[in-house]
Length: 269
Image 1: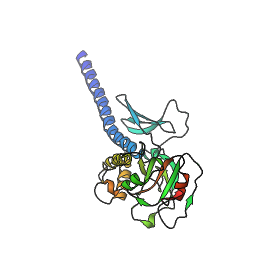
Image 2 (image 1 turned 90 degrees about the vertical axis):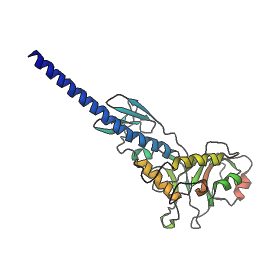
Image 3 (image 1 turned 90 degrees about the horizontal axis):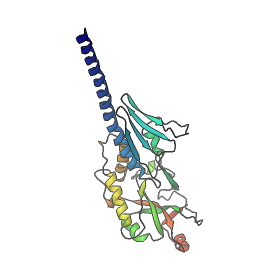
Image 4 (image 1 turned 180 degrees about the vertical axis):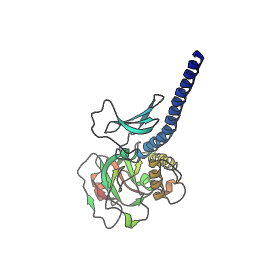
């Protein structure tokens, strides 16, 4: 009798350990997919003027929690049976996110409204003495042209032409919103406008976007590949493939008259 009981306990323990091991393995496999998505989200956030997306992982064996800053105070938790947004204990938000990763795309927002270089758009220059201007250029420029020509202040963000030659699909205007169909994407510039700063920032963008191809499995990675494909139909992007059609910049003092008379500025806000 005692031997039989020991055998049952041993079998029960083996079953328990097997269930725990299966749960840990399931969490590990699901977490790989989630972390690939979060890495792509971090890259995607860099296409907007304001980006600070980052994430941290806390592992508890049978579940992993991914913490990241977002307006809604949601985290993302991986369980053996599935993965879900979970509210932070310190959050008073009533907004529950449901769709991962798409609900996080709306976190990536910038500033300004931009207009594609086209004769169909009306010219509007609002020089109101603002500390920062969002501008659309009169035509596409290369990085080297902007680097050598633009001398009006510190460029914070370069608006990239990611729309190809599809005039019939061009929107009336473009905005920095990660979830918008008419999104404006660009290169975040973190250095003072001197030397080869814009070249350096452009190469950082190129290194990032060239990681993505048609075989990428993450939802955000597919979105990044679509942007890459719109810049160049085939192959990796080179710096000569980048066309700059606007920017956000902090103006220098005492250059108001020069800026007003410069034809490079088509639309100014």
